[in-house]
Image (cartoon, rainbow over all chains, first blue to last red; front, top):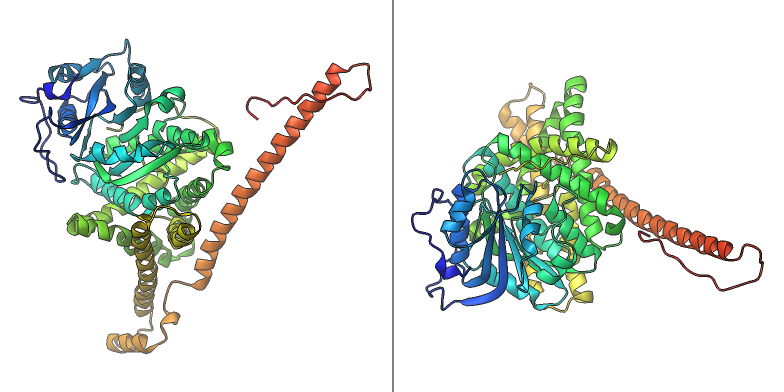
Length: 373
Length: 156
């Protein structure tokens, strides 16, 4: 369905976000460049946020050829909202059970050179697609992802996630990209070469982290993935613990499941094996120290100074994101959010530790896909 | 999604080392000259991280020393004493701590390399075993030498 037909008037939208970036193209949709791209938007009960997502797609400086909303048997009228907006809307006969399942349902119909996956609660900066496309000029590149920032930064959990993203996307990911091994092409906003994606069978459904699984599968097959920091997306992050715990559980179990799934191939991939090794080491040892070792030493051996370990690295966490915070004029927000990061990190430790015990040691795989948001 | 626990453990030092290695890799393998801007930025961040780490150790070390000093001295005396004493005495960043972290990174990479070598070795052994089985089954009553047929297991 062509973009200029989108009927965005009177459609439900969310409140104005704190973060807004870029300028809307002054050109009419008919005058803007169109690229051979299909955008797949998997949606399950997303009627509140879907309009904003589709609007941000309609306002891109380079427009996709088609937008497909996969209404995964929603019960809140998501499909009706999508249809009212004039985009291609498809509905599987029954709920596919995961985001990957819904995306795969649409992938078989894609005929364009590139496919983009975007969550139904994610909006894009107006030039995001235009900035991602040049990454594919190099034939070996099969996937490209961008910078991710929470759309709303209000609650403790959103603020904690905001710092996590700022740290990961300003410090870790550019380094990973320099070594041509970004660890994950984020599932909320990534673009793929359709032929390679289809040849691989689409998004894998064997783990709870389909984006990580897909990225590592690309590396295993000798392909390249790029991170383009200028292309920015804004997903809605979990606002409360109820949603956050589902997301953390899915992510931590997904990470361990992917380690088990890919470890034999990963050890052959330079740099990536080290990035993942360090990540796994910290996930195991830091979480053990934070939730077991330090409390025990403090309680039984009165080593109270060890409590400093929970906060002593705060300035070191803050420094890498300072440049980006100044650039985005968000220093105050970063400073106010850093304490929330400490809380989220500690909570995350429990989930990572539990996932390690369950998936790696006990070999009990957690397979229930619970939507985090 | 993001994996693991960003901002904890050996990851900090590992990424500082990775940033320091970037110019060397660029000089030896790099073709894209625009990468120098990224390298400069990441190096600057790495330098700031190192300085901040040292300063944090210094400040926290002095605070700890201040609050755990003997009560006979006045607060002013404690501050003066600390400010005129060699900083290394109070800095919480110990060389041993950095060595342990570096050791963990080296050990981790060694484990990965050993795992890789072990996997390759086991794959070769498996292929050779299958080769021998094929030769054995194709010549049940003969000791004549024939060319071997290599069979690689699908997941090998």
